[in-house]
Image (cartoon, rainbow, N blue to C red):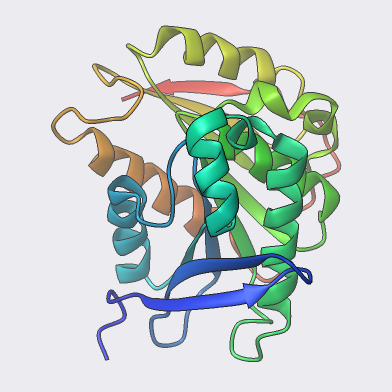
Length: 235
């Protein structure tokens, strides 16, 4: 079986809510990376699938989840409110991690989170509430500022990737990074905008994410007790 061909999964998180996702599992996976999509996106995100394929080729299992039910997505398409309900989305992230912990082939894998746009805030809030399960975080064009006070509680090493032309989001990432105490790095992709649609921009995102997860997504998490000041890198 081709590990890059996703398998559709779904599971109940409560009596009325069922979440769906796409799971890729390579032979002997090194870890599990859960994609937390951004506002208005879904498990069908072509950008997230591109990054997921690169990570799977490197030996990581990946899961692209819808954080809203089908009914909620219909409501959100009209009101655009649920996509900014960070507490709700974070609870769905936690529910997904809990579900993975109940799946025998996947339960022992260290968990990483890849959050995009508002999904980055949900990933950070979820990680702050499950520090023993989340080993590493990558945010692509994220809104970590929306995580609020949870930023101080995140212990997982966090990589923020922002396009140099996405100036407002870049400043919001800088603001959020100085409120965090986890090991942290901010990478700026020169010439890239918010969606990283420029030539090779998303490829660079994949490369940086792969490097971060390779370093930090390990079975024995590194010591996270020390405070770090964020480092910036431009590529």
